[in-house]
Image 1 (cartoon, rainbow, N blue to C red):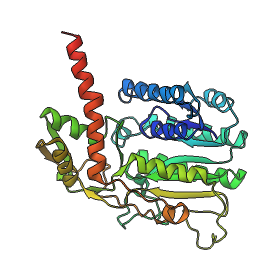
Image 2 (image 1 turned 90 degrees about the vertical axis):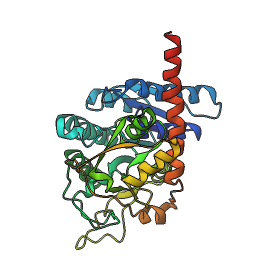
Image 3 (image 1 turned 180 degrees about the vertical axis):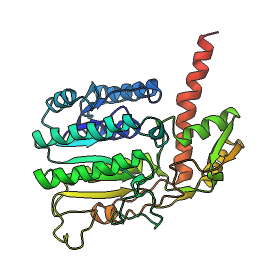
Image 4 (image 1 turned 135 degrees about the vertical axis):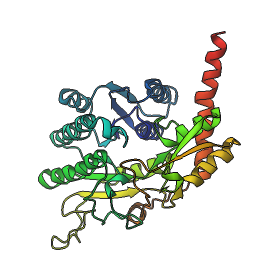
Length: 352
């Protein structure tokens, strides 16, 4: 297939594009490569995608466009490159904490940018739009595990509010223009090539260097940590199966996860939440180093816990997460040591 992947230089976008290429699809990727975090990491991801497409005779072709989805002309240009069979929209301003400081960045990328994607999908009659949402939309809900049928009307951060808005915007396009859309609520994604602003990198990096880590909510909260390979598997399962109207949808008792139009929502998580203190313990074991921890109260916008019910995705497509936290963290640390530590040692050696 020809697939457009937005946010292709990002953590999840990179892994999705890599798997698409490896199975022979042609990928056009768009990303503004902004400085929200280390641009070198983003460039390294892109270089690896170019390498896969260039060296593996069975791989698909890769084309990269450096542009911002908040620029409607750039989005129109991207959609004009090929007749796309699928659009996987992963570009967004990420991060919960940053939304407290710079909400306008979320407005531009997550609301304006998403509108441009919807309009382009409509104009080019895209067969299926799959887009990233987040477990953060569940907000103040404490009924667990989280189910797509639960209401998501009380977000605790502006970031979550913009992602919930994306779900509602998508439904309007599914309703008005019969655009098939699938929203995917990701639960705490981690793994190799992950973002350096996320907790796993900060914990691993500081524990490895013997520095103090900051542990919020005194390590008492829990997350449904989901390894990147399981996330990508779920994304492609949903992408390959186009959204259809739900014949059982009842307007008198509406299910928020489906519709009378080609629209649906899925959780993608592990389904096995882990307490933060236990997660840190796994990191300590893998590094064979003890953490120096500074325990602090919960931060504004943080939720106490997340726990995904993935039964809808399992029933629909056989999704089954398979990577344990112990295995996933060990794989991440192996990558960290190779990408960061060896590179730093080489730079130090060359500067002597």
